[in-house]
Image 1: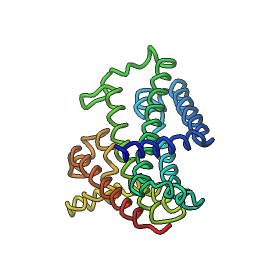
Image 2 (image 1 turned 180 degrees about the vertical axis):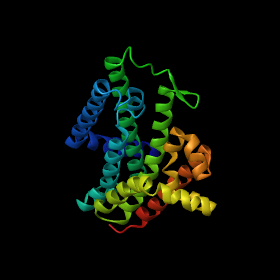
Image 3 (image 1 turned 45 degrees about the vertical axis):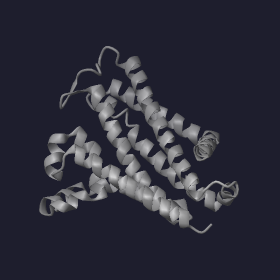
Image 4 (image 1 turned 90 degrees about the vertical axis):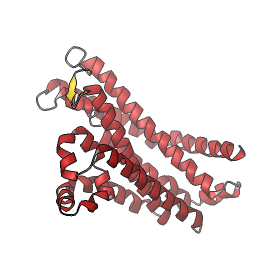
Length: 264
């Protein structure tokens, strides 16, 4: 019980630090502004920015959230080492495991915040600008409504985001500078889209290659376009979900081992 209370205290401290950062509120304002911008563009140029598609994408909020979270995750550990505050926390008799898990939980709550915010803003913009032009209950294909499709893809993006973040956590524990962790996270995000064709070629030739982390990052695309990605990747959605969960657990475990043995 004592350990749980201490962990809760550490999580609250991490959340407090996030709320005190100007960048948190500037980023919030920027995300909302981007959603408003694309909602207006969708209203003015519906043929270019199809209202149903832009709503499903939460008005292009998801890529921004990914960049925000990669940066926040990379710095939540490395900044502690750079400024020497990690030693101060350890001197308070918190274990290394408690410190790292508290950072995991803080980032989990932080990522939930971004997704709830983006979905809430998207719903509000839909009501304000597309009340009579767009029904979120109309079919988006695959037996899902536009709203259900948006939620499903958002959930899948959340899972793959945490695959990236688990790797970023690992790298942040290996290096004292956040640049390497941020770079790998962003490169990993873009690399998935760039090497998709190469991945599919490899998978078609050697089926076992489909079990690599980059393939797992295509989970949202598979849910959005199952008829396209399932035959290309030779995988079902549940297999990709399972693969994501396994890789997340492996990367977090590896990061935990590195952190608990790291010299301060």
